Length: 516
Ligand code: GLC
Ligand code: CA
Image (tube, rainbow, N blue to C red; front, side, top):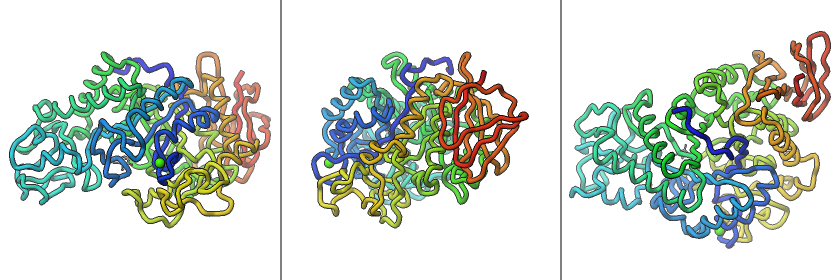
């Protein structure tokens, strides 16, 4: 299964994640929209990003920001029309860019017509579309449930919030009479319908999917054996009908997701990854006084398990976690990006992280965001009204914006050589011209000490070998290294020096050096 082919464009893709609500509003209703994304394609391309992941943009009551879909086949009217999305695909392709939509196969909104039908006492085509116990008095052990809202006698399993009923893909090992097998009629019908959803958007020009909670589909499936089988079946369908479709899993276990036929997986901010040690904990490594050793140990573990293929994407942030800029400040952000843009897998830049947009403190939850809301504020484009996001009255904006006088904006940073955005643009350009730095180049860690700086690793592809050295701390740092250093292809901060088997790098500096 791991021999599957990967769309060529994915090899050196650099992604930009767009939370559509907050990106660019073109009709002054205070909410970003699809034409707003199309309008900014050149901005994204100019930064060097070649691909985009858009959070769910389908019809929804927005109880979880669109992760509660009520019609998989229709763009939410507040974002525009299906035709607008088709035009976005076309305009992206004209620029050599690619677009992943967010597929949410695990659950729907309670307002989805399928769910309304499945609530009914009379048996119908959607009775088995979701997972129901066969008596209201039985709660599904190990899962949350929705209860007491139907004429149907039963409790319905939920997948995330309690308004997100779980679609039925069956149980790997059914244990109760109401638990259907993976190949039961109802479970197979759900799976086929999800293929139809994929077919619909792929035929329209979408290039693939980021798949929400991809590991959650089959229940009672501790080692994900059933879920892997299910995705392998979907892979076969894609190989036949859409061989170029790219699939990126929100799963966090690349050994499993890659077996399931996904091309790439994400490093997640929950679970065992230690990703948070880098940017989001009390003392993040990239804030200058932390520890990256447990992260590296875990990283190597999943890297080895996924056949050293380097397909674990490390995001700068996303719509579910604190903004990178919350704990990592000033030039240290540039060093964080020197890391993100020199690691295997496709880098994902969360909109606004390229200008160091701040986490907006103290916001009331919007659309089920809760603490995530502060990372979902409208993009700051320039110094005009509402930072150029929208011409609607301020009170109509999706969430409050960062109101500080010195809030960063894209226009100012584009005209400043020393800005974070300009640095990221340089870093992406270096990555583009060096295969060793891209997704498939191998990685070998050279130096990672317990609570120590710098962090250093070698990236290799064919004859190209590049040593990366990162020191986001406030002190000069040295490590033993007897590699024969060649030309420096990227540098931020001070110069490194090599002497008697030791390499020294000044405080707050980063560099990529060729190895002879
Ligand atoms: C994923 C999404 C998150 C959403 C959840 C439920 O983790 O990234 O935003 O709330 O799934 O769909
Ligand atoms: Ca709008």
